[in-house]
Length: 111
Figure 1 (tube, helix red, strand yellow):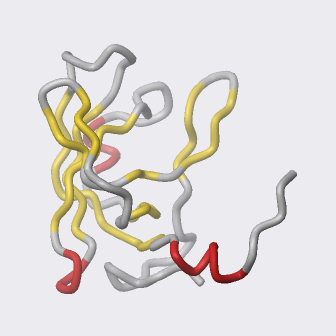
Figure 2: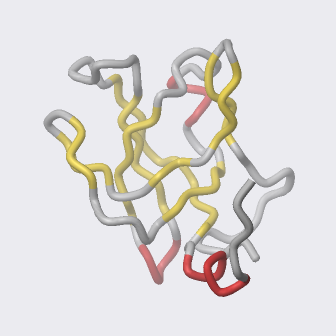
Figure 3: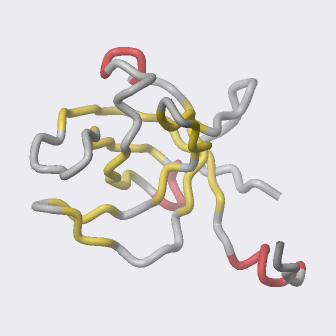
């Protein structure tokens, strides 16, 4: 495992956001959802594509808080631009979201 400096970690903007809208993303090569995530007044609403269909139904995601990286450049994924990276843990049976275990204000930075 490569060691990084504290300053490297501080550059990554890991923020909490609440999923406000979920759509199927049939154009994705790997099954995914389109997510709209509210990261609070400083950052706002960002879109993301998330390959989390194995463990999560659309309705279960609405109102769920997640942890996302908000300072990566936008990435074109099929017909949409993904504006943030939703974080999770890869298991053999799919991705499990990284989430706070208690509600916190949208936009709060992990640190």
